[in-house]
Image 1: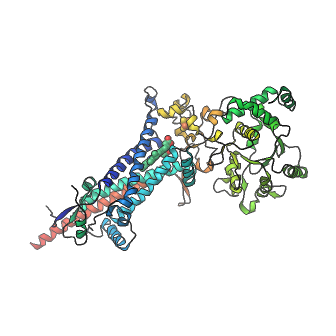
Image 2: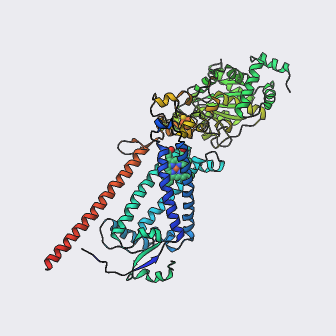
Image 3: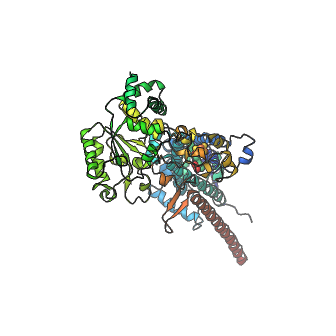
Length: 235
Length: 368
Ligand code: HEM
Ligand code: SF4
């Protein structure tokens, strides 16, 4: 049975190139950070052969972890910049539940994900639920970066001072760093599922949007249409 | 400069010239100074007026004093005892009772502003500090009397520095370290359980020679001794970098001297010079003899460094009667839970879709 969407869609440009650069830098660096981080946390048995063949494996993976860590920190810096200098959809005012419009949208959102309504709210930017979780992720990322730098340079006076004020001893920072690692794994799992789920259930085409920066918007949608005019489609 | 006579005079006090020079050389080496400063140290240490020291004991096991006195390098104990004038030390002094109290009173009034106060042990603060009393006075009161008059305050051992074992959760007596009570002046912390006597010696010699304490880190520990991680000076470090780990005590890797990271070594987060200075003059230290570092020089180590044979501490979860869970388990439960929720969510979605398709076909059938 072929079911046709009875609507006409515009392809609108939402996510700037900078934002997409941030997204994929964060994604790849986090992926490497988790894999190498888990090795650092619990290196599996490699001794039988490592004895014969020099591998330098822990040192190498730590090196990758730190290198990826720098990309991760740079990505966060870019996102922070976009909080203020990004386009309208990239600023926190658009996706945090801080005003009436956003709160209403949040309730709607939750209903949609709980299968309580079939009607998908077509929004230009992040949904409020997603935006809130991304914001929490950003904060966790900052904590990851700070604890990471503290673990990496515990002897540098300024870092030692900040780290000690915020987290206590390096051991306490290590525990926080490790626990949040699981939050990132948790996030990736849910994030991928929600992205795929949305591709099934909503017409926005958000997965391809992560590459192209565009979203599909129903042409008959009232509110954002005049906003659409304001946004140049760059390509 | 010093002359042979001076040294002989000093030697008359119980230390041979050789021992004495050797001691100062050890101190200089520990401080990371060039041997050129040894004569200066000797000169300072030789001054006829030896600095008076008042050694206070609170909630402690006397292990720090013991470590000092029983150092296998007997020179050190003798040297320290000859370098300073130990006016009050509860374990060592002959006096007792009222006489001892008088000694303390005299020492701090006569030498006000000149003596070094060494504090061994934590200080209970709960219920106005009644959990540690000496001669009818609480530890807090004694410290309050003595510390403000001291020229320098050294907290020896993890208990004096950070509260130690009695400050471990739930800390029933409200024990704290010296630096938590005396905030208006720097405290020199020489933590460790017990600390290496050589670090104490070097600190004292530094104060005698230069009249000021050594450079301290965030936690008030002398940087010459606590400036680097154990991990960065460990002889097993090449095994760490190479990925060769002891899996269980007594396994082949353990016999070969592999890294102790996976059996809970806290070297990567512990600051001390154990691996360089070593103990007992025979070049031993915990990791050297096959046991991981337990992190005893770090604040709160009883809480944050335990379980000793695990890499990271457990997390206290205040449900189910208060269970301690390993951090890892929490993570796995969270991720497993998320996976289960995702599966259920997807199943509901698919179920709903199938159901609605069936309904719509049924409706069509009815229409016909
Ligand atoms: C999403 C981001 C990150 C994840 C998931 C992650 C994960 C981990 C994990 C699981 C560990 C092992 C913890 C342990 O058991 O000791 C670790 C250690 C570490 N991470 Fe990260 N990390 C992240 C970001 C960073 C960043 C941004 C830096 C800073 C450049 C960093 C630096 C370190 C350092 C220095 C260690 C300690 C290595 C050691 O003990 O040898 N991490 N990380
Ligand atoms: S034994 Fe401990 S201090 Fe030594 S390299 Fe291994 S983890 Fe580091």
